[in-house]
Image (cartoon, rainbow, N blue to C red):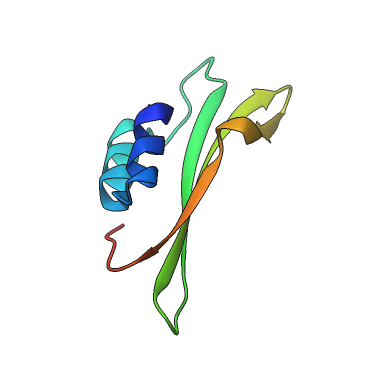
Length: 82
């Protein structure tokens, strides 16, 4: 999944990335789960440019640690649906 999302980000296909990530996830971590990912989206209220950041995390003990080498981000101008 990470490779597919990275390609979508690289090709400015961010709506596809959001849709695919949203369809893949679950609201609650399954029993024994130790990986999760998120796409954080922030939009400037003045220029309406969005910043999207994909972050996978790994459960280490009782804390979630970001996996920096698999994290990526991109700016996007245009409409995106949640």
